[in-house]
Image 1 (cartoon, helix red, strand yellow):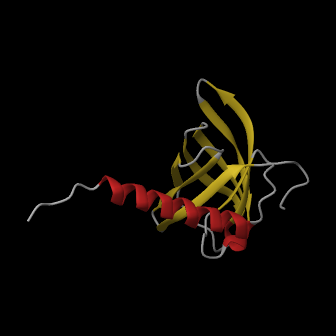
Image 2: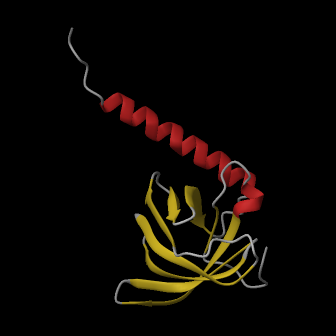
Image 3: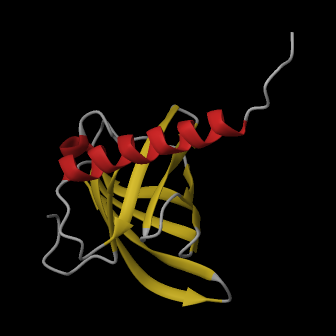
Length: 139
């Protein structure tokens, strides 16, 4: 935990080392479909602005108080909901790199490890769905 306040969402941007990538997202303002707030993680404090809905997230994060190891450019996060609950898996991208992330509505009491396992389960379900949809190629 990075704050004594209750976050609105929690997640990890490192599904292979989920404790390292653990983050807490706090919504400060929602207006005209745009959500703004702050994110706390191991690199420091970032602001974000974009859309967070039950069906997808699409926002840009920028560190404002951070350590030397943090990304310096804007980081874009995009994810679609992949299951019935408030969980999202997706990708983040910036000038310095990209990766996978998982986030869920706070209050589920999931540990970073449980979030990473949920990401792998959802990813497996998605791949299975995609394979089931591929048409057979006649020979």
